[in-house]
Length: 75
Image (tube, rainbow, N blue to C red):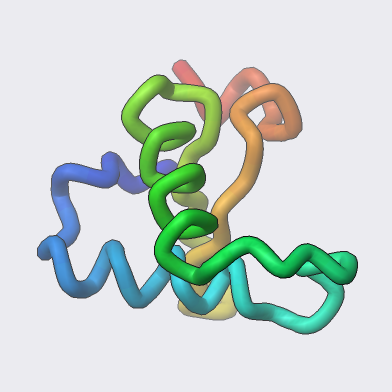
């Protein structure tokens, strides 16, 4: 299930994005400040390039590029 970013409280969305950009293996040696990485993800969400996916079985939210999400989820 896709979750519209604007359905989350602002601080919840920020924490979700921060969790995503600070996970092991996501920085690849990138020294970009956290605020910049968060802003990039927020911009991708705003432009519809990224989506928030909720997995009901695990109860977890993930961020994903829209192009990587099955088409049937986007309908």
